[in-house]
Length: 499
Image (cartoon, rainbow, N blue to C red):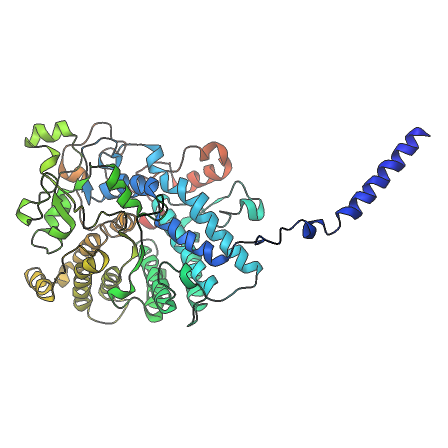
């Protein structure tokens, strides 16, 4: 009898409890707080996160990418990309930062907009930024979590698969096409649009220009698809002037949140110098005294600006050249290295060089020489627009430079690739990716110096950065599948579009 009574009492309590809990979620909502953050605030946040903080910009962008493509050099051995050495914490930094921040936030934005039935400009902007975020990740690492990434809270996917880079690229191109089509003429983003200040015309140009970048990235791996998407991007309308440049204008505060990640690096680290390869290319170029200054005294006289060879420690530099790092040029402090400097995502100059390449390949109509020269002019004249303390490059200076180094149709792809490399200084992820695709400029390992002992590439220039080692245990099956498909988790393994 007691047992039966206990069951009845428990059952009654359960029924009462269930009835009491009815509509409990609605009763428990704090009416003074929003149930969901405004999506515009989230868009501002993800734009800022995509620009990046000091952590990944110091490591993946500068320590590895800028050194590998020989924009910069350093004698400090922790600048691992300069010596082709393996520092997992540095090489994995973009992966480590992007997934819990950029990826998580952009997937959350798209999930919220989908649930709310929003299909207009907010969704279009989100899809363009989603493609931008993932293209950086896949370009640096190859096969990466994509279709299931950022879904831990949304779908409970805690061990996302690594998608094949080819599949990622096909989907990113589709996302860009559809994202651009969702942009109207009137923006609802308000002050949250810290990239284009509500100008949807510029967003459309950025989406199509990014589509052109991704299309040309496939020129080695799949020329037919590359041509088809390049044609579509150009027809859709790409950037037409320096006023269309996609960049985040940073501020000095508060507390580092709004600061330029590259600028924060220069506040903390005085080691980087301009590479000898880069300075030698910029001789007789009006950009050199804008981009560089001698470390010892700040001189910007081109005759005083010497680039430092890559791959040498301070001891090796002094033994071979009898010099210290103080005599070499560094990025021009007070002009381009500020914490309030802009962070560039894509420039009009890049687009003009891509147009010249598409025409050279026979994929578009027009005059390759005219687009090449427009790209050179844009790359030179954008500096005073982006950096208020930079000297303006005049039309006459541009004309003098082009007359001294005229476009040679027999070397068109080489000249285009070299100028693209010069124009993407400080946009190091893109410089590294485009160099791998085109092979231009032709770089010598360690800029021609002796092979550094301890390098992990057998003296060859790295072709990618590496996955976090922890993925092998925390996401073992997905990680193993990626390695089996792409190749060993090494700096020398080529990503799909680079094979």
